[in-house]
Image (tube, rainbow, N blue to C red; front, side, top):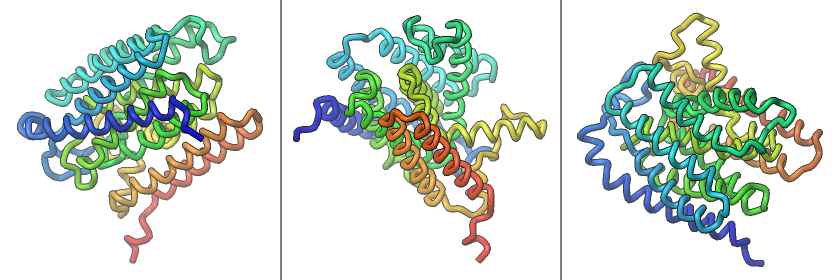
Length: 341
């Protein structure tokens, strides 16, 4: 049996984006090395200045390939065009912040403008909860989107961490697209983003030669958030929650813990569970390996939740994902057994 056309086009998008991303990173790394260095700070997991800005290549490859594929395969380009425009804007904001730090409030306002462009460009007929007044839902989505963009940025603090998060999520979306359970345009976005991250992976493997920077993490958060939003519009709530569950649990639990302690939660820190894991004796390879394994499980659970019609099964799958994620966070918060030997 021949693979469905959407799957073949998705795989082509992945391959093309991967090669373009890797080639661009190789080309721009010397320039980033001279002008955009990430200096070690209290949040950092690296000890020497390291170039950042690879996100420019990742996002350029993603948008270019996805734009071409969406234009060829989708009849409704209104939302993708808004998403691409907002992604370019937030990438520029992120790159400016990489070069010279922008104050918290202006940065949030600019990010909020990008998220709002995505949220409010959607048709008024699209709602996650039809019973909820549209303006309330859109306001809540704006706040949720702003948080999601920032939590992806917060979690991009370890070599390969964003790779092991994005690749399982986007592969799951590609599979759902091939099965006809996910719209065409976001399927191509997911495929192109997956390829671009795979092209970035060799340069970011521990010890990293280059980082994404805010120019990459912020638009990646925006693109992933938009893809997950499509699952919400299709009433696939369990899948939309399962796919980003590790990032969401780690970042949200860390924020709430810092707020409860009266700490300045907006300042740089090393309180995330994955950071605590390295402080507790876990090597980087083990941390990202365990997160990758967890994300593969969450992706499988998400796909299963879309394919089943049983509400009971969806709840069971969601509960299983929560349990697996909490177990991983619990282990990261404890000393590595090997450290005690």
